[in-house]
Image (tube, rainbow, N blue to C red; front, side, top):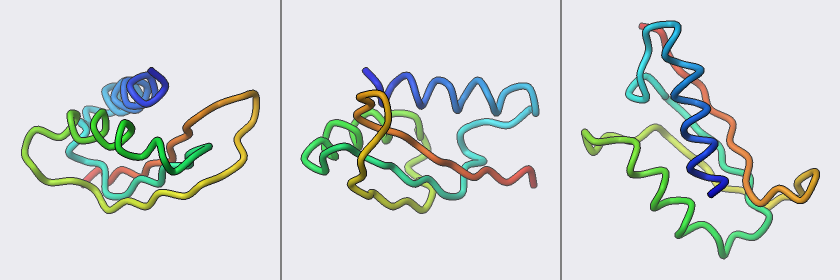
Length: 78
């Protein structure tokens, strides 16, 4: 699924810097249809085992190339 692929990409981007998903402080989900939020949220929550989630927002948007979801995340190194 697109949400799972995005979360995997974020995880792989953080890893070389020695960071994990617990270092994310904010994520914004851009969805083609907000009705897809429950499915996106299920995948998103599965990446945070400690029950602490980054601040987040969800926005309905027109996405390029037929995408259904896009994520923008900020991580803190310290």
